[in-house]
Length: 164
Figure 1 (cartoon, rainbow, N blue to C red):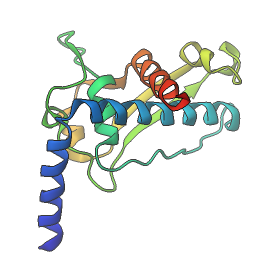
Figure 2 (figure 1 turned 180 degrees about the vertical axis):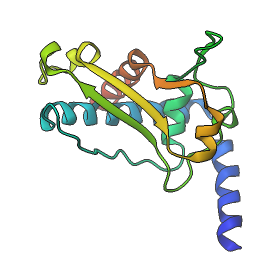
Figure 3 (figure 1 turned 30 degrees about the horizontal axis):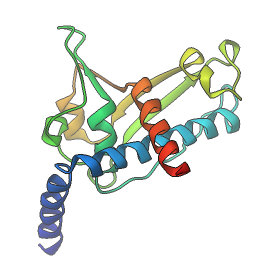
Figure 4 (figure 1 turned 180 degrees about the horizontal axis):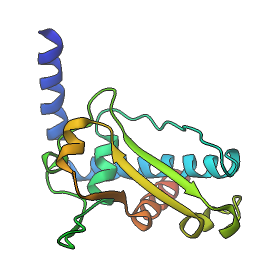
C-alpha cells in the first residue's frame, strides 16, 4: 500500500517538474549527451555481427525529457508524424520500473568507419520499441524512434554548457 502511494506522489511530482521548461530542457540535453556517448562506445566496442547491451539508465524525468524533444511517433497508415509531446500522458506517462525504451543498432561496417560518429546515420539502422506492455499497446501499428538531428543538437548544447 505504501509503495502504491509513494508511486502516486512521485508521478505528481514528476508531472509538476515536466512543466518547468528550463529543467526539462537541461535534462533532455544531458540525456542526449549520455546517449551519444553510449553510441560512440558501441561503435568502438562492438564488432560487426556481435550483439551487446549497453544500458543507459535513467529515472525520474530524464528519458521523458529527451522524448519531449526528440521522440517521433509515426503512423504508417495515415502518414501522420509527431515529434515530442505536450503532456507526458500522450506517450503513456512516465517510464515504469523494469521497463525500457529499447534501441537496437544494426550497423553495416561496410558503409562507414566505426571510429567516426558522423558515419552513424549512414551505416546504422536503429529499431526502437517500448518494453512496457501498456505503452507497446498504445503505439501498436506505429513507428517510434528518435530524431537523431534533434538528439545531436541537444547533446551539443549540453557539451557547450559543460565547457563554461
